[in-house]
Image 1 (cartoon, rainbow, N blue to C red):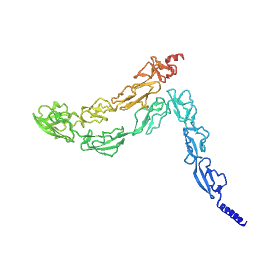
Image 2 (image 1 turned 90 degrees about the vertical axis):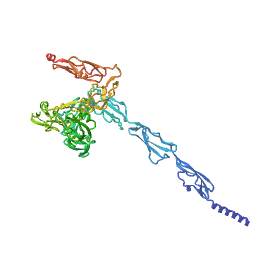
Image 3 (image 1 turned 180 degrees about the vertical axis):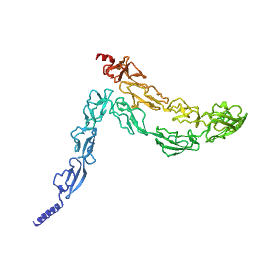
Length: 640
């Protein structure tokens, strides 16, 4: 019995010894994030367990209990589920409230763009386990209330239900009135119109503040077509054109520009300018110009001269250097001078010529210098001729017969009829000149040039012609005369060629120069269009002012596409006139289109107008008021 008992005890000891080596694995020892807890609190050795990720996460773990510790068999870490793009809201934007990925738990917040408002109750979406919750919000354009105008104002645009950005344009029904307020308003992002609905008022203008000038006889308010008179301060001049009160204000801004002289010809023949680099000068300021060696001040023999800017914006003398040239020699006994002196006659040029004296021809060579041709004289004569262009009174009466060398002649001068004595020498008659006659300096006419060669001086009664530059008027050459007071008579200034605005068609719009009411300068163009629907342009859309003061094409007209368009007919009586003319002549019978306003007057002191002076043709072919009449005042006086 003792042996079995011992054996049984050994078996129990061995069992308890082995169990001491086999410990359980506990649930609390599992440390993975975002996983559901294991089903049991502990697991025995060799037992396996599957762990699942929490809702919103993807992944899985499989663990095995090995002698009291967990061994990972499969590991797919738990990561947040991803959502697709949340969707764009038309006219809206969105942004993530946190992070940068569309994953479980992420929230996007939607906002509407400027001028749009959200009509959805919820403005956000969140990424859930099943995807995005809610729906994409809706943004609709902000609406503005309906527009209502009175009978004198028309509105174009979406007047019933304006959306953000919509523009409403207003115009007056009558051409004699203008918008009082803003002619264009727009629907703002807040659902309000940018300005209130305007009304119409009579066309008036107020006197502007003019820098360096002032309004003459200013008025508090100027009526339609009134002219603004203004003057400029000393040293300033008014701009071209006359300001007139029209629908959109003054036709041109009354401004005073400082009087300036511009130094233009500074490239050719100019050696030095003092002050250097300055080309614009105020009235009273001066500039000194020095010409290069082969040039001189135009119309003079000077190579250096000062020029002063005058109050009229012109220089006192033309500040230009011209190349030195010699002219065909006259009264120097040269044989047929035009045959030998032609072509290049600039400084330093040499010309061969012949002298004719006592039946003999003598050859010589002349050189062009600053003082003219050398030698002086070109021909040494053995007898003298009748003097010309020397202010001698009746030269043929005193200079006749023997006129050999040494001969003396007595004569009278035109200037004061002085009695003098002349002697024939090899240089011609002495003294030189025979008469100290008066001479006219070469004329200085801006924007013009002398026909033929210009001389520094001209004798009394000399006649010359000048021609205006291209683009200036008059176009034909002008002849002027040097009178006994050494003044040029007959001068006409060269003015820039202009073309007149000669249209009375009120439906015709000048697009390029909408404010011009006077002549247009040479080279400028006008572009036309018609001011309302139903009219088409007949003629050239663009015309240009030419150098002769004529337009390149006749002014176009606006004519109805439908020849059956409604018109208003006017039949004037003999003693009545209107502002409707044909080439400046009054028209007794005519028709005008709807929208046209005419002005009527009566002729004669004993006649007065009964009715409205201005009437407008309406869309249904009737005048805005009964057609007026011209009645005799004496009839009214007798009745009263």
